[in-house]
Length: 137
Image (cartoon, rainbow, N blue to C red; front, top):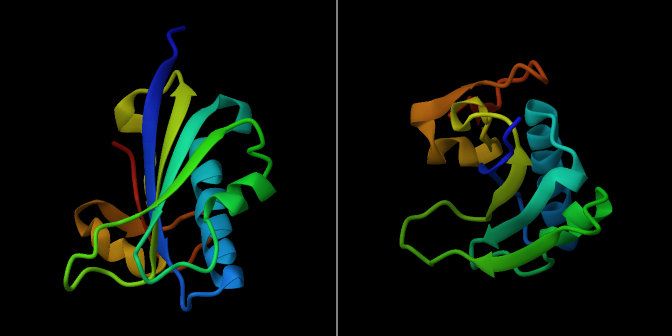
């Protein structure tokens, strides 16, 4: 079996610029990515988190550490401040060592961030909610 480093993308929004809101939103996003793809912490090479400039109360990577990503290289940065862009948005790019093909990866966009990729959105089957995520490839 050949192992490839694949990217998993995801995004979410939070209601306010507080430590608690940022960590809760990031944990929720990561848990959904883990569940949708069967990700194990030991298979994650690295993850890059970004926030819009209006989120400054905490590093989203703290949520990953709380989920046990202790030996994973993590980086936080800010997105460009593009006029009219989605506010209070947290994005992640996970570099995942896997045998899956690129079109088998599930990219997760939830809460207000489902508008970032409406071309690939569908109802989230794991929770039965009307929140949005993207499916494969």
